[in-house]
Image (cartoon, rainbow, N blue to C red; front, side):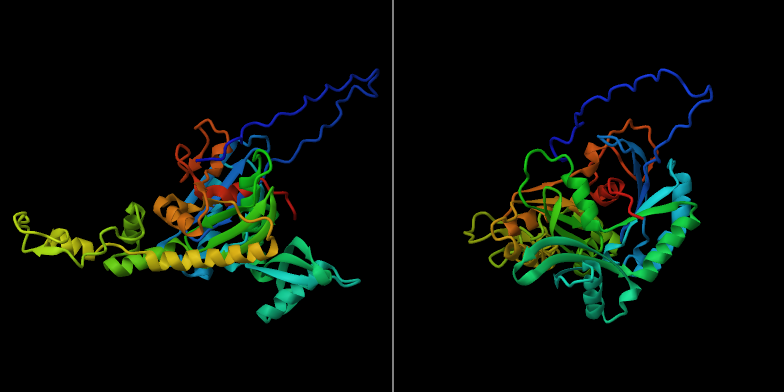
Length: 409
């Protein structure tokens, strides 16, 4: 469900401009028209998503489009991005978008996101210090990176905790060139954690507690902790729905597509009938003999075969929850007096309720699945290829957040 309290915000009405006593000329004065809201482009692992909303509050849908990435490209970042850049002009042309201005995000799997502690130095900007530190860790020339950093808090000893977001300059150049090739003007580039917080924290009533935003995507999981729109922690985990489907495909000896379908049908990641040690097996499909005493359940061979084939995702789920738990421990060390109080799930894989429930239980946090598009007004007549506007859309948090972000280029 969507957040409560994300309705229309009130505000004072503007007073009409007073009519001048005398006009300097009968010729009409030129009026300044505000630029149309930009189109947001999200290069995801599982899909290429494009979204445009109005700049009003609440925002209203202008157009949306989504196309799935072929399965064989989902684990090959270079080929996947090449395919998405080739498809982008077609999506924009057919999508019904009403702007030539575009913002985009760095693909999460190709963005370096790390917490750093930097010491201020006279005559050197924090950006330069952070870029040099990242380049040293990656073993590359600082000039080959585009970096941004977000201050978290001041630490003892003149240090400052920052979150550094970095990407290869060559990668960003390719994305900008592709947008221009699609006859669009690039006006902004953003990181997933920043977009997530803008999409999900806007309009929250009162003073919300520190919140864990867990964006579970096809290939990555973005972990972000924020309070009142301010990011306190961010990290990208290279683990998502694809890895879960691989585990299912291995157990069932089936295709990834079929594995994904079976996984989404699960109401538990751990088989409820996994323990069959005490089961009595009856040959064939014969009815059990209730006249004999039994210490456990009686199963036919066919039933036992189905139990043996039950999907067990306890190990991959533990990998994911352990990574998220480490993130929360780091946050707790930074903010011992401001612990995380809740978890909000977004991302396409959060459609799997059993997965979200399993993670929430492991983290011992109250949870909800957010529908970021719930606050977007729509009539139902807007062009929306690949977006089912009558259903919850947790996977559209990042595109919406980019639409709500400032144009920074």
